[in-house]
Length: 279
Image (cartoon, rainbow, N blue to C red; front, top):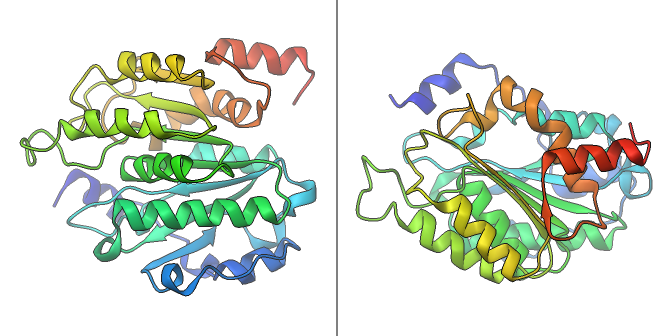
């Protein structure tokens, strides 16, 4: 059993009672969005609210909508993985929060990226002023793919992006976690991009923080790169309480900062928030 599988077995999963189709979820938020096209709807994926349906604010009252996407494992269904705490903090700050659950058998970069782009466009068409795609590992990759397909994506938050295996089990391909990431950053249309890279991440070929900064700066996209923050170690560090304590305010401010440009840091984002008198 992998470390990831052991971690799942230790945590309760409370998503079953929240699962519903997009039409039901958004009806609770008083939105009007048609179901996704049949070709996408037939894929083994489901949009679910992270929060209780009664607390969904809807497009008029919410700061925006966040769709979080989990990773992908060859051994376990990552759709059972808990949503990271920082997403709950975004809900408290006024965002409507969802996650895209995908069964690994049909979870491919093209299909899942296209589905995310489709959801982003429908949320934006329903009136949400901001659409943010957040994701862990494989989820970060498909979030960036969606941002390269649709102008409806306002921001991406990607933690430990990876889709091609780790050093130990996939030595021949794991460097693609760098080269393919750079290709995706070159393709982002207009979204501001936040990326987090962790020390001790066995899926990380190294050097991705500096290269990501170079690409995003050259493309003149607003960006936040958190590269190997102290005392946050491993591919799954974004799921820790320590990560939430240190970075949830920063990432929430990033998601809401429509006027962002150039290089962003957590210090600058939180200073901007205080000057604006925001909670």
